[in-house]
Amino acid sequence: MKRSKQPQPGRIEGVKGRGALSNPENRYARFSREAFDDGWGSLEAEPERLKTTLQVDQSRSVITYNQSPDVPFDRSLNPYRGCEHGCIYCYARPTHAWLGHSPGLDFESRLYHKPDMVDCLRRELAADNYQCAPLAVGGITDAYQPVEQELRLTRKLLELLESCAHPLTLITKSSLVERDIDLLAAMARKQQVQVIISFSTLKQDLSRKLEPRAAAPQRRLQTIHRLAEAGIPVGVLVAPVIPVLTDSEMERIMSLARQRGALNARYILLRLPLEVASLFSEWLQVHVPDQAQRVLRRIRDTRGGELYQTDFRTRMTGQGAYAELLAQRFQLAWKRLGFQEFRRLDCRRFVKPAADPRQLSLW
Image (cartoon, rainbow, N blue to C red; front, side, top):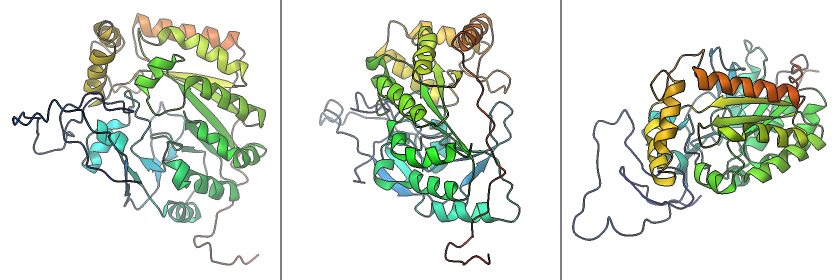
């Protein structure tokens, strides 16, 4: 990947192909900076195109465990930190502060990968105390973001998981997942994979602003069809549902996905944790100024007067009259369209890999 000068904290208008409009300091920074006009006209100059950089992730482990009662898996695997898709609403943006970066433009341009991730995963799966359970791939940042086309890290991880019959769930909004249909179809025949394609909107123009480097909505529908045609269980995730902007599209997204072979459906109401709230509010003021206050008021209606609440019971679906109506609409559409629950993934076939691939088997 080519390297370029990274953006300084402060407001950066109209960065082509990026979701965030600014690069605020992360919440752990000791100092803050702001743009200052030095008389040379630098603030009025057209911003340079922001290039993506790639750095090495020094993490020692690769499987992340959680105990969240509202998350349908207890472990996940994320090949990349940061996400070039640039979705302005992404709840993972605040995690970039842990790396000393901004949840704004840094999150979508300063990416991390772990070149030895496959070896690390092999060692963790081979550990004596490892107990097999479905692994969510791409649950935080997309495993099929643009950089994957070059690095093929997700592909290598899938090859390892398929070789030891480890079940997994894939969550993505990228059509690049079609590249790995051969592996996914082989796992599907053993009841060891599910793929979930997420949508926030079907409107092309709005999608380009909300999630500038993700696959176009119509292209994602085509991906659902191709996965289903290959015998791979596929579902649709309507997420995030954004009050006022996208909430009216929920039933149509579900219907079109069902027509193309989606078996299961879920939805998540917009979540705005930590820095995401200010970044999203800024985005609203620039892209939909006439609707900005309506959107924020409706969000507060579902979050007890705040822009976000962390309560496990309501953080995915919200609370109040609007949230209840949204839940009722979803349930009616789910039944009417004939969606069904995924079959339980099979963990019984799992065989621990050798911690060192050069090690010969005794059998």
